[in-house]
Image 1 (cartoon, protein in one colour):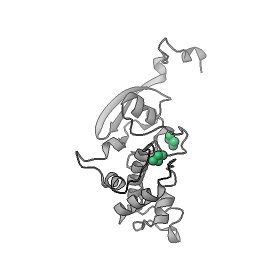
Image 2 (tube, rainbow, N blue to C red):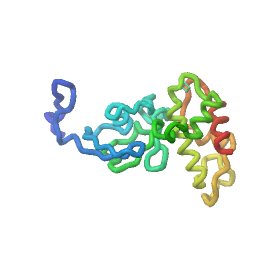
Image 3 (cartoon, rainbow, N blue to C red):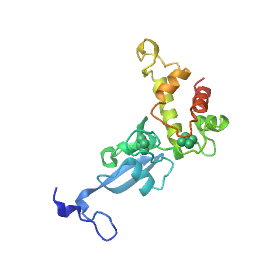
Image 4 (cartoon, rainbow, N blue to C red):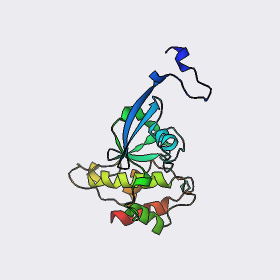
Length: 188
Ligand code: FES
Ligand code: FES
């Protein structure tokens, strides 16, 4: 790459337009078009460009799950996704889960079970749980699914199943028991 093209302008932004592209995203049902540096992650597009700070930056390396959102119906670590590679994607963040004033059942269950302490991991836990419930309903097996599951029927969400399927979402406060109980409430 031509090093001169990497030169930053006085505001610290990359000045070269050839490193930017228009990206169309459907965020919580609303179409948005952003002009983004090609290195911008979906997480940074949400937080820094759209002001949607629900998804958190924990590790920025795909290891904690704090940044989990739902992309085209499947949960994903948004810190690992380049926005430019997701042109046209439909993204749901924790801000888009409620139906007007009515919280999503997973949000209600987290509140009812007091399944959080500091709350930093909670948006990612909730988005991950919503995505995971969809995966289980679609018959996706997990590592602990009995007989491996053949994908022909919804997976039964026992506590071990929930723990395994949520293992990509870390909670520094250790709220795991109540997180599992909250998800069990919704799954039952
Ligand atoms: S911030 Fe994305 S997985 Fe940790
Ligand atoms: S509630 Fe504090 S990190 Fe999970």
